[in-house]
Image (tube, rainbow, N blue to C red):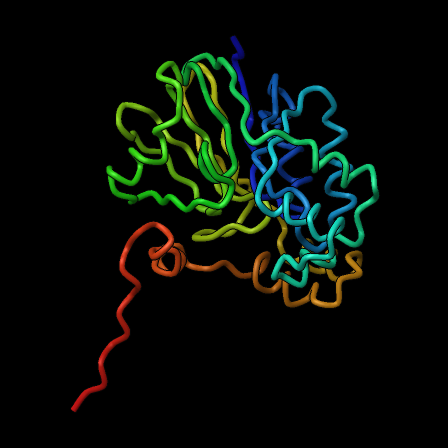
Length: 259
């Protein structure tokens, strides 16, 4: 039974944000650090994976959809659809490609407080499926249909927005994104333990981080990426509206012209 587990998700190659979170005392003291996917698809992929690898045996890695796509691009040339991801895939060392290719889709741990906990990237059954804080009960029922009854808590990432809610008797947690947060700036993560689940936010010097990304990345779109995801932050409400159709909701209606 683990007493303290830190969860880091969706780092997306943002090394300064990752380093700020790894310096947090509760992350340094955690028995396990679960990495719930989308580790490297961003402006500083190689040193980001090296920093995560330095966690050694404390780290439990999960493969996200972006990690899978990096491997596919590297091995087949198939585009990911994102310039920074295609660029990142070409920069990875072969040992890093092998690492990402071999990661599991889910991990389960016994955690004091949350109990039997399943960790995944998007949902337990799919690494790209969208569920949101206000997803309908019937939607969650389908998403959780294959989860074993003894699992009390499910931790997922993918949508870059932190929340915790109870769904059909289970606690569902999204730690938010370390490197590409939506809704609120900073580096988001979660701490699980005897005190339950704590959604955490690490405040770091984002101006300095953005300048460092531009100076050290080598990606020709690094300045734009840093403006959008480090200095800026997409509003959660807009993201939820945009992703609504993938959650089974009607597309947002455009206002009709007056007259």
